[in-house]
Amino acid sequence: MYTRLHTCIRFSKIHIKILNQMHKKNISGTLNCGYNKGYTVLEIIRAFENFSKKKIKVNFCGRREKDISNIFSRSKALQKVISIKFDYKNLIDIIETSVRWEKKIKKIKKTLNKKI
Image (tube, rainbow, N blue to C red):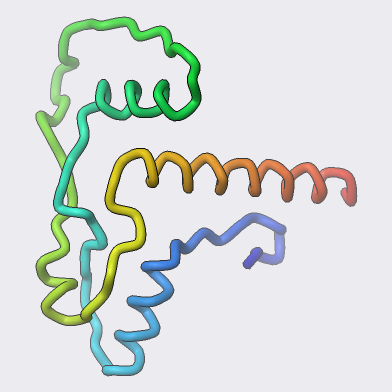
């Protein structure tokens, strides 16, 4: 889906499913779509290295002022309102689908640039 300026409107499968269910059940509100698990930056880097078979250079430094210690999204309210199965539960699956998405977007942008 694109805006009139040809910028992509991004929705994940889960957002579409939830919006459809909320509309069908006439429910409104804010619901988190998280997996109830957070990952450290280093866990994500190591998982991406494992996936890509490439080493990522990491520079360690101290915490910055006002950095949050952790953040993740719980979906308890979502599960109470809508029965939904999460498609991607492990970090490698999440990374793989993210990379596929970025490749797809890159291809679309390339096509759009040729038309402009």
